[in-house]
Length: 264
Image 1 (cartoon, rainbow, N blue to C red):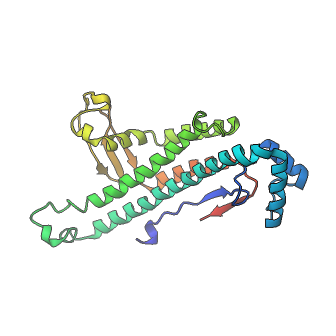
Image 2: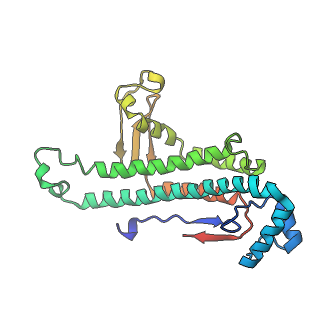
Image 3: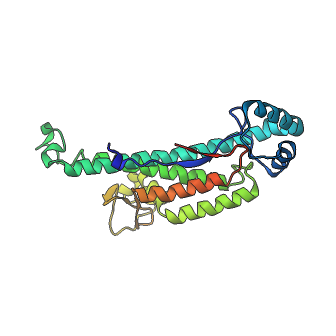
């Protein structure tokens, strides 16, 4: 793989207070830190961290050491994996573009092992490689979407404050508008055996003029979805940049005790 086709994703991450604690800077904690230390966003040294932690435990007791600790760790894990899923998509997009370009530069006779020529169509194996990467890209993007969705649901993530959840709701709505077909394409991929039989959801007949399954149309992974329409998702740096924006906006919804930094 050449650097020309390697897409890196950098998210400005607000890191946790320290390795031991994942303490969200709620308004109550913020006021306490400002009163005790004069600045709730300062970079605390290791010795200061210990002092701050002790004062927080005395002030907030079990609310901090149990419920708050657990909920904030879950939020940190959600955000960390949100970034990881996006980076998975970035890596597979790079591999997809690189493979497509390498295949385009190959002579036909070199695209599969010589022993298969005459027995299997020339593109039987080579066409499968970009499709593997295309579906991995789709998988990463769907996981980003699903993580955002979970963070909008109070029943599943009750520890996210209402004001923050409202912001994430807007982000998820915008993500859905930017990638309106992502779940339809994913569902047809996951239930391709139904689509091949001409079935949509719940075994309903698929009213489709054309059956398109796992087809690369340019850089678009295309499927006939459950209502008979044809939808696709674009495997490109353009799609990644859009998704990166929404992931960054989600990270920025949360405030932590320690300041922001770029994590490569």
